[in-house]
Amino acid sequence: MARAVISTIGRDRPGIVNELTKIVLELNISVEDSRMTVLGGEFAVLMSVTGSEASLETLEKKLTELCQATGLAHLFRKTEVRTETTRTILYLVKVVAMDHPGIVHNIAAFFSARTINIRDLNTETERAPHTGTPIFNLNMTVEIAADLKVSQLRDEFEEFCVVWDLDGELMADSTVPGQI
Image (cartoon, rainbow, N blue to C red; front, top):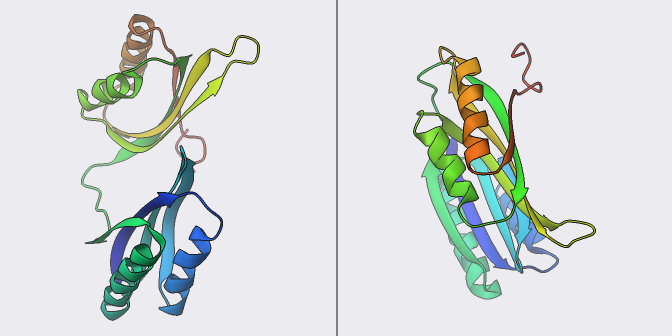
């Protein structure tokens, strides 16, 4: 089976998911992983698909045609299965703070400096109920090398959060069997 990742974005409207998945279904391609969400006034799709080489080539052509007809933008990239070179343990990171520029960058820099891979990252800003203050929420999954001292990492992350005025937490991912 061949594998590809596709990304599309366009003005949010009903039917985008239907249009994309109809093409995928007609070509007998499987959607393995996907993320779809509204960001601002745009609808963004990120999808990992598998199928025959020929069906993926046809998908790329049909996706280009759909995007030209509907005003969507897209990216199509053939890829392979990700191979793990070292044993890692998944940890969840949750951060809440009054919104200000640089939060995502600072958190990414903290983990990057420790050679910790970010596997998944979601952010959202909401208004505090009584004051209307913008509150920033970050939820992230990171891959920590099995030989890393997690207690030391937690201490460093707590200090980092104090310095940057963040309410943060680093915890084992309880959804992964045998991990906690």
